[in-house]
Image 1 (tube, helix red, strand yellow):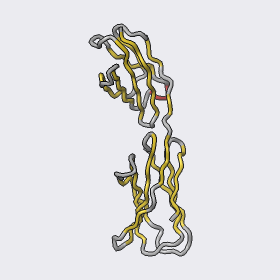
Image 2 (cartoon, helix red, strand yellow):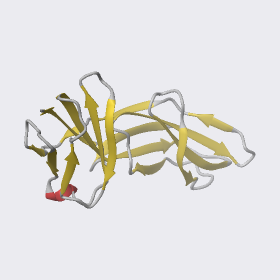
Image 3 (spheres, one colour):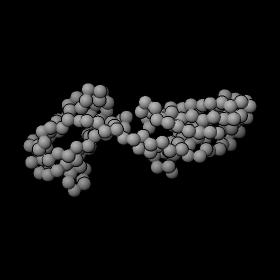
Image 4 (cartoon, one colour):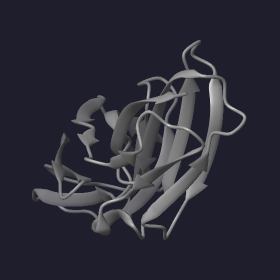
Length: 176
């Protein structure tokens, strides 16, 4: 079995070719973020016994940002299975330009999201100068997010935004 994949439209398209098939029931696509612990993300039925090459395709619509490890498990009708080699596909993180203001901050700061990201779920994390998590919130359907800094200690903070499609943004702000 020839097993390979590529990034296509923020998704990963996986393909494999069988030279012939006999008693093959189905294929299971397994995915991992660390190359060790795999989970099943879908099954594809066999085309049945044949002596010809067959091309199969599966699309991972939600790849991890960064490295994605895949392997293919082929299962026969009697339950026996074989597992392919592991392939690795890197989904490079995409940086997004986000407007955060004012900086330095007095009482509140605002995060302005680009129009195309208003309907996407946004995970906002704030980390203080000591590397501790100060705030974690999830937003969806908002073009402008307001964060109150009234009870924050004066100093530098890192604001990190991440979206479901793997896009991220990171900014530093100073709270007075």
